[in-house]
Image (cartoon, rainbow over all chains, first blue to last red; front, side):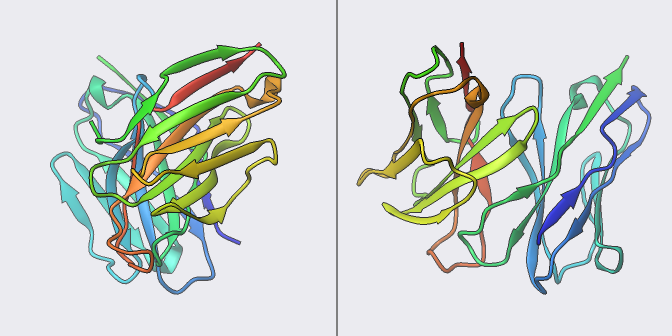
Length: 115
Length: 117
């Protein structure tokens, strides 16, 4: 069975701190996709990144970076120099490699950044 | 703005009633997915349509049904509503170039918040 675990329910940091959100997944598939989505207080789900299972290169986009380690089945997300606008619920998700497979979401991590 | 639209934004109704949620996918996207977000269950997949055909079902109750129309918009029908159906319902559309394509990202609409009283 496929499963995504986000062990951190809530994280609170002060602006400019770095923060890492953990994601551990389980799948029997050899190829799959991993995702991160952001849900700000307004409620919409915003796509952040898609990573396929055979590309273990870390990715950086501005203050965001992602560390994918297949050996530990982890896909962690780091926000550098956090800002108040980063306050949101962050979801890690897993899907099969073929289009048409549903996203399996973790329970989410609520990040609160205070000024 | 993802380009996916959902109406209405909020819906308040009573137990036993029936409601219809509407979703318009991004221009050019043929796939539509429905998800339910509740406090106890989290984000759960309900159903997937591709170009008008049902492709997969998840944890969708028999009281719920959906369809995708020729213009690709989709509707999720919820009937005999119960208190526990109160949730945020998301529609997502996908950029897969075909039903078998391996390249796909799901883009989510703003959601419809349903409150059953």
